[in-house]
Image (cartoon, rainbow, N blue to C red; front, side, top):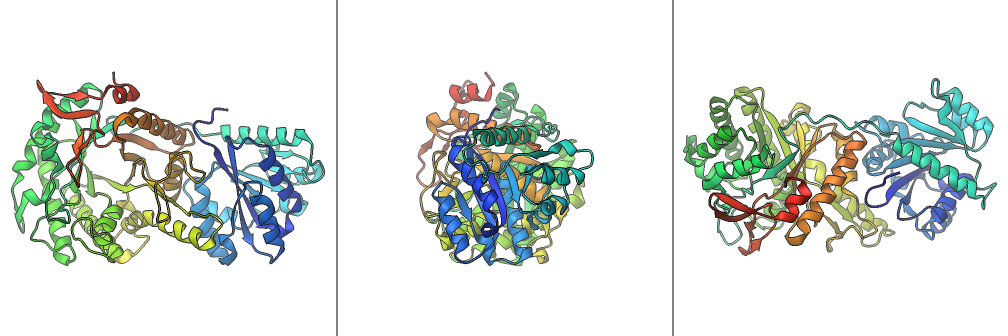
Length: 556
């Protein structure tokens, strides 16, 4: 089968390692003989038996199997929640011993990875539902037949593979398991249709307007020249069949006082988009706001909602098409940069979660006002897709801390949907389109450096796409992605391949937005960041094109 880049992660879920000698022998056999470049084997055990479980841990870890004992300290409901968070990250799940937690966990997801059940007892085969089960593997004909009796219309999906304990050196067992894994992984859904945006390939114009710690306000639309060259930029992208872009308003230029708006910085861009028939996702708050507003106050929320309402009226009056908005760009990153690291305004430390709540509250208020003006409006919520891993995976405390920080990436989405801190006003309907921003440094070691695709704990981007869709069931836009220098073309090819792999298992990835589409100046030092498809230099009305990236995109 075609695997794409990277190994496929296979998760075995056990009720208790101490009671699973036959199944553990199978895991050991597969760990010894499956190609590690194609498969990586992981184990989660739900119950702990002192002494015996540790022996099995050591046995499997010596074979390179990743053991996750987190459920040992969790209740049943907590284990179900934990599994629901974890299992979408894997290409395939194999449940041993009729694990009671698996089906409730799968029921909580909008998308489920394929499930194989593996049993050595007739009682296991007869127990529990089977509607998620792609195959049931019995170690005897009695177990296989018992499973078949529970799979009406799918009896052929109950199969027999002898126990590795009975035939520990039999190569046929490896062959049977490899064939089974290939069959189940190839039994995929058709790619979903692409239907939301005018083009799958999109471009993003860097529009940050935040204030740095030295007090200087950035304006990337000015430094790239896009603010005065918007129509030509749109037409150039349209000539490459890029018909959808991300672009931004500069709130600090528009609202000079409460409710006093000057649209001169925005209307030329809006009318240029109309003239070029360019579909634009408009960022309303891309890190910057007027100087006279204190972001920590209720006034900030109210004024931002009023600003959003005014923008919606302008766009409704100027355009006939369905409008698209990103209300607040990267709530998570903004909360860290402005509330924890004092990297940019409001230059705070220790207030990251507070700022995250405030930004989510503002986004929710803005969307409600926009919908009152134009109920057709669509919203893209753009957040970084990240992976944080422990330096030492066997260190339980490190592992838990890394995972806690990793799943915090979903807090902004949960706030908007009303799942977390519902007093902010979030609702499921407001979580419309999920935007995921992904760059080469989005995976790192806990409190350490970034990791690359050669690292043992690196996650293929497709697993981040599937995990996010499994949590929310919303269409996904890869809303920012890109690299610098010579890595631009290879990076885009990788992202396109990962998006295709996700779509092949049914994930509705609706587009890829290369960001920024124009080379820009660095936030901190004005260095020349050669990361775009287009150059900052304009000659005879056209920007230069980075040919290797254009070739990777298939536009020339």
